[in-house]
Length: 85
Image 1 (cartoon, rainbow, N blue to C red):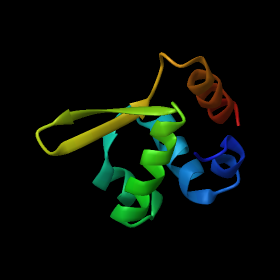
Image 2: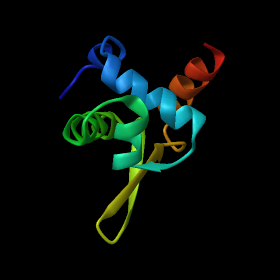
Image 3: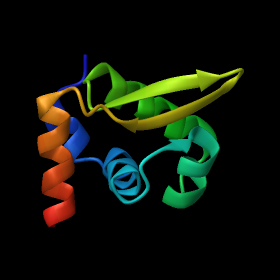
Image 4: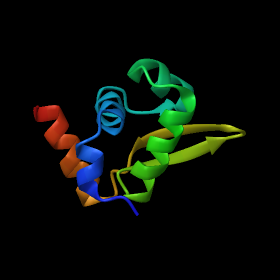
């Protein structure tokens, strides 16, 4: 399990959270392109963010779309912090 401090201290996850704040829902390839990460790095960061309850995904066939997990109060707070920053 990854601590929330590691997410906030790492550029990759923070870039992903910022992009998801700006654009409500994106698939992994789009997130990777917009953040300057390669696909596998973006996918790994998204798995960590999902395990912390900050993002969730839905699947259409083999394509996964990620968004903030609005049901999680912590995720809403993180999103509000990023929007305010």
